[in-house]
Picture 1 (cartoon, helix red, strand yellow):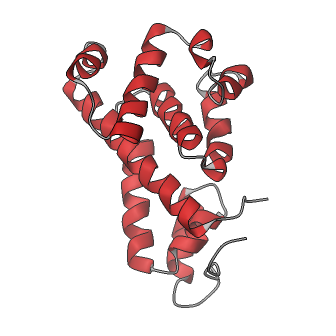
Picture 2: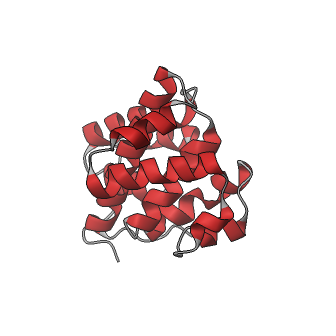
Length: 173
């Protein structure tokens, strides 16, 4: 159960903003945004940042979703994991691969570039600093813009998981 109440999207003070979020996010306001709407300015900034990352970047959605799924595992953010399973499956990952991310044997389920993205995600999430050799290995496959976008994705979704877990958001129906 969430540690503070969710904002009511029908509240006249936030109804317009909630409607915009619903229109951009598939027709409903998920619990993440219901919580964010407790602070309309934070909700708006969050929406803009995550919209840029998810819809306006050149980075392949495949690697974006892999990084997000790995962050969810590392940070034990079940809500984040559940929300992104459909997106990861759409990008070609299998249920078996996604389940493997939660195990020590995950390396057997992914190709070399996937593993480099996972290692980069792990380094940013767990160690903050990325070793030069790992950065260089990943950089060999991505443009400067894509490296910025991958790095921003990992940073942003670490923010998401920390928000979700601190406030203990409930899964959406």
